Image (cartoon, rainbow, N blue to C red; front, side, top):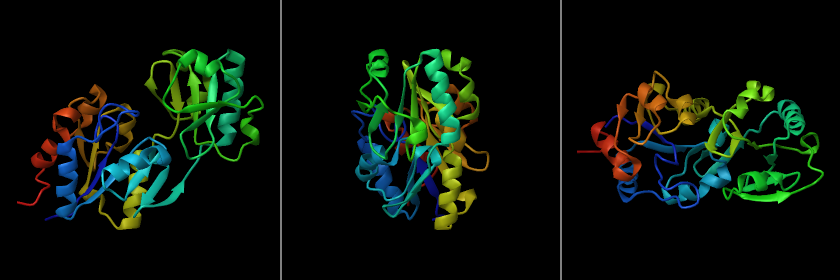
Length: 259
């Protein structure tokens, strides 16, 4: 069988019910097992931080992952690298948020922890996505690394933020947005170079706007039935919903299992 290099987004694609209650449907688990048995290279491609995707990687029984929106690579269970956001762009963005009264926070480590200068972010969002700690003297110019930034505001306020014109960002929750990498496609390309994969053999699965970066013309693109309209419009195949055997059904449609 022709070896394929298959990459799955996590939330809404491989896993259902969001971050806190995420689980991989039984049919998707079976699909992963059969894909590996057929000799395919199977990996995750997620916007999640590596530390916040590790449990799903283990749940899926996989060893390879493009994480951090394309800026992190894990191969054979080992983290090769995780790139961080450019401080020279984050520093003025923080200043702009202060001027406009927009609560903000930073992820300074590769773990589920957000650091804020005060309680205003939590008072605005009441968010439970990750733990938040307050550090009154928080200064982006004085930290070593910045993995993500969070800005509390409702759409379309972000369209008025000048600093976001040079930085990638996306919105998964109504009360705030994520400033984070959106280069899954580039991360996949980097992984292919390392493992020796041929781009023509790539298949990607996704459901959200941040998956557009890996829905490249030269790859086979599968959108979940629950995917956003923008992704479905550029997909080669639209399968059923994540909870309706979407992953398994697409694998059958693409003849990825051994006879």
